[in-house]
Length: 115
Length: 114
Image 1 (cartoon, each protein chain N blue to C red):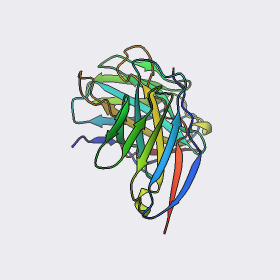
Image 2 (image 1 turned 135 degrees about the vertical axis):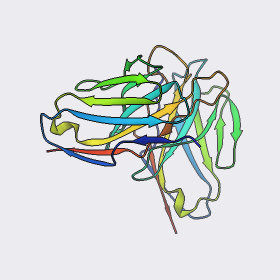
Image 3 (image 1 turned 90 degrees about the vertical axis):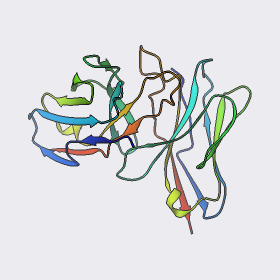
Image 4 (image 1 turned 180 degrees about the vertical axis):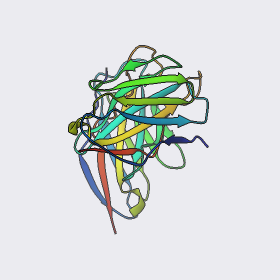
């Protein structure tokens, strides 16, 4: 089974802190994604990566950056956390092999609170 | 980027068949239709994907009319555990230049009652 793990289930940070959210997948997937989910807004794509060292902006990249130095790991960075970044953060991965079903496999999520 | 429209919420009862329809008027020739399910405090989980006509797996069926401007997810004989949010996505899923097929939107909150 594909396993996507996220470094923390719950995280509390203060305004202005630099925050790292880590995501690791164990199925050698090329693509990885970061979403945030807020009540009434659904899932919104922050950034995604097609392969190592590659990144693309999603719908709401402002205030975030990402890093993909190794294939299995995709990090989301909040350079200076703000209260409006309090949210549930979900990481996902998927294969890019031709002919495979392009389903995304999600991690359990990190609930981040910025005080 | 194809946009989807789904009902915000639906109610049904145990043992009933539930159909959730998604509208995607601007679907492109290369686009597939994918449905995900999400339980509270969990990430979404893939349910089914299709391109045209009908697709069935052990969990659900997906009906897509000839014009492909809409699709219907059908859940047979639902139980309380089917209470979840269901998302419809449209895109080719493989494009290397953009977030096509990665827009989850707000989904449909399905509530199953005893």
